[in-house]
Image (cartoon, rainbow, N blue to C red):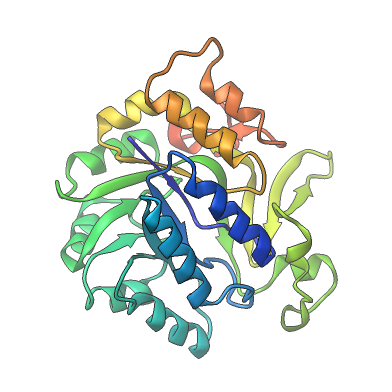
Length: 295
């Protein structure tokens, strides 16, 4: 099974982004997704910068995919989308239907995790439009997923969010700005202050959600590493990691060893859980509440 690194969901300084991908160059990762998927106001890196990172990663043997915004709200964002989908060198992960419309005229693309695909008929239709890979929505339970996979087009690759925080919602409002009593148009880029988002707790001080600009994430990280044999036998080709600021080297190395069936005395899910301050979950995979952890 291959390993992929999803786009960075947070607003990091340009230097941190460049250093992150310098590190990724040296790791046993097969596929790297690049670009801004959350907020178009985050412009520390331009398309030219992403393309330069892509060239460096490609030179190190990685497959590079450019990712698009999950929520398109303005003409300027459509213009930027046209530049991404029209690039002549790299495949594109479409995270909304506008991107799919553009990409269906240009060739193969990746169905991003924010496209609602819950049955094999939709999957087959998108494959006919040019989809070469499907990133599975995290809320699909194992039983439903097995049914969809049994009827998917045979040439279509499949990728599952195996480890990392889940993007639960997007909004036209900016939650980070609102938390600081700021308007969205005058946000002062406060999301840049939080390397891995701003924790939202319940009244009982339980870790609940993470605020990340216009995106709401789970505080817990989905952790499916102990199901890797089951995933592979069901036809999953790629294990996706959602990045955070720290521990990417240890995370990738541990996942690679586990996928290669290197024995450990402690379950891999427990070892990975040490890198998540707010714990892990796998409830959606089991068809239960997303926050549950069956491990």
